[in-house]
Image (cartoon, rainbow over all chains, first blue to last red; front, side, top):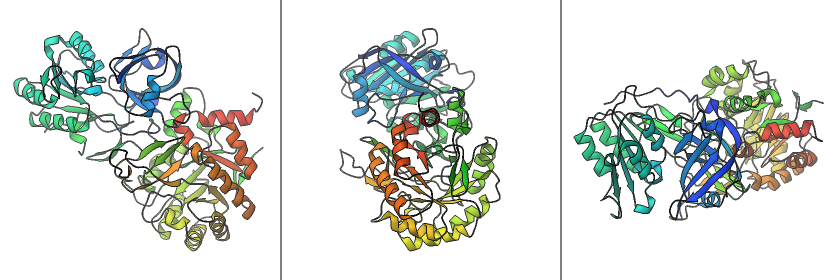
Length: 269
Length: 289
């Protein structure tokens, strides 16, 4: 049993959030349905911590809800935010049509990001599909990490070159369901083997919730503190509407305020 | 020019739609980045509060529709004691009138919440939620029956001398019948409308997206329904009306005031743009700007 890494007080992040008009610097297709959006948003890039998110307003006003996105890179010097997203519905389809130079209304940074235990030396990061994106800035911030990236196919893998550049190619383990890249099978199989072979002091995971749940169980069995990043349908993004709640051991918590990163031990799966 | 809502004096006709603004702390922090104080609002209408804590609904809680939003939050709230200790204590420092939105499973629950809140000087008025489609007992069950609406209104009227606003549902055959029942039982003002009952299905399974099936539709999609309700109720009763339902633009505000509303509330548009209310207030204050 691992000790809770934090207490569920609300984020200071949301209370520092800014709303601004960001210029689209780039919005390019990585594969058929994965895109990378780069925004000029210096006031947000300056303070966004790994694992926090931004809330984007879509150009068509028929979309009354903003869309929350993880940030795969915040560059305070350049003032830019990178967002990797998968087209899954009408909102992301519209976003994929946004062109360079277009202005997007961005709210952020929001929520609480990754909180590795003080003194973390060797972490294990497990990303599923586009869920790998918020693990990239975490990898940048840690002294050493092994990274497991799982996806359905090679075309759904996100960030493998960036992770390799950060932690070394031989520390990046790739799995695909169909075997089109890396080892055939699931990220959780490799996670189990790595946890057995190495004394990690922190596990962080983001991706499909069943995968995260299994990673959390494996980490718990290995007695390694684990954090998960949970996705919920969200309306306000700042903690008022109670749409995005996660059931925890101490009651309902808001993914946008107490999360999206939670201690795995406090999530009532 | 001040606005009078059944004895509640506001400096402008703008408030928040309950449940879309919490108690204001989060939005106030965001507005402060642009130097906008919470008390630009005529009043803050708080998230619904019940006697005991309510956990809210399981499963999916929101889904977007064309120009609209379906929600099934289920009035999650920490109960009146926590509301007083945390939310009201903070609101008391904000120099803004507070309309406390009150929910219950039974008549006695509503009255008990009001008796407790009547000890709090920070509360200026009450809004009775007898119109939420997202809870099984209480909520909309009171708002679709004129006898039940009158009884709960009368019970709350007996519990307070403060202005009493009753929030009505559009999910009835004739909203003027419910409006008259509430006014005859002692309502000083009416809020209309709460969300419109709606259904969303999962395209993969054909099954309801929301655990309770029904959810409440809000946003620009329901503005004509709300405007019609305001116009009809305005013709039927003499009390002030707070109009709400899809208000997003200055023209929407003018439409509701023209239809007979004395004040307006903004809800879903705050999710789309958290600065909607300050923008509308600035536009209303300086129409030429």
